[in-house]
Image (cartoon, rainbow, N blue to C red; front, side):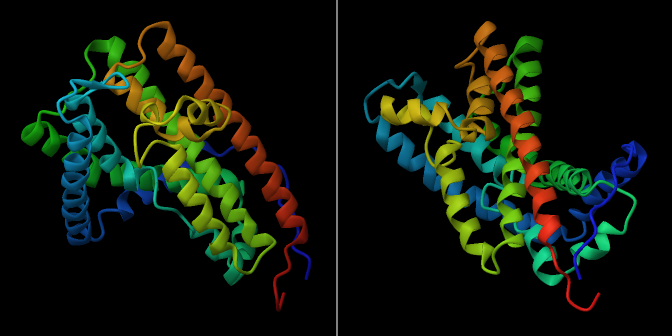
Length: 275
């Protein structure tokens, strides 16, 4: 049966806030899993620190980064792994393949907004459970630095929210491949590899050749994490910081509009067996 498109509804702020709260609380259902995940992230963080420190050698700075900046960068990226789903996310993809999306369409909500609220709660929960402890450990053990004053914290916090918005929209777009392919997981694996490289998770983007940085500047990937890291470290400050936030906002709006368009096209061709 051809799936019916949901009608346009007014945003139900209370509903989406409740969904976000449930997504947040769900992350605390298995505290032991979160603990072991934190330990695993810390272990790989130590390995990454060793690699970056070896890269510096006797050089005090590389591409404007000091050794302390590199250590803070490592702590940040390890803290953001789960909150920003840097290793991938296939929740919506699974609902399409299983046909569960049909029941979602019967509920009185906008599908994209519903999943965004759910993911926002999940991201916040993961940041509290694993991100904040990771940052605290890096600060205590290796002296990782933090933004200074309102001029440092305000743009950094806004940037982190926009990084989540850009990342979610991109991940949702990738998941929409399930409407056209029964093996959309393959698209996802490629997309997550590109995300890890282009967002600056594998290595600070400033360490790459200039021509590669120029190419990435025309993509949304730096806005999904690298911009936040640079604002946190003070690599971008003042007017340059706000210009970077404007770029993030532009990519977030574009990606969300594209996600909504692709979702509507996917729902037009969705067929659910037995109904």
